[in-house]
Image (tube, rainbow, N blue to C red; front, side, top):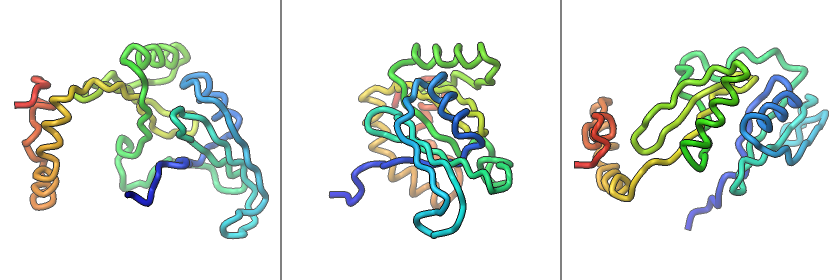
Length: 182
């Protein structure tokens, strides 16, 4: 039995707590469930006022943000050596139709959205929140056959990658357009 029982919350920094709450409600229908504000960091005792907000992602999952008004302005949500597309939070939606409806709402307000992108196992769109964090909405399109095929090759793929640092071809069907395990 795993020690970890789930994700309590994932936390990021934001530029403006109120703007963040309103944006996530408007575009992703997340409810604002909690705010914590302190003038001192509980863990380090560092004097540093902050607003810590919590949003309900659904399914018992929480997304949290810190607004830090005494710190220098956010420049980028990830480090300079990591490509901008790498670090992101992917959120599951019920259907491709729900994902496309969210895309339409964002684009109507001038938010740039990339996709949909067909990943064979799921389709997704990518966009940034007001603080610049990259988000993804993902709609599952996998089949039991696909899951079984990937389960069968996952360790071989990982071992080959570890040796070669080149993309293994065990699941080429995901990217060759066929979408069908061979």
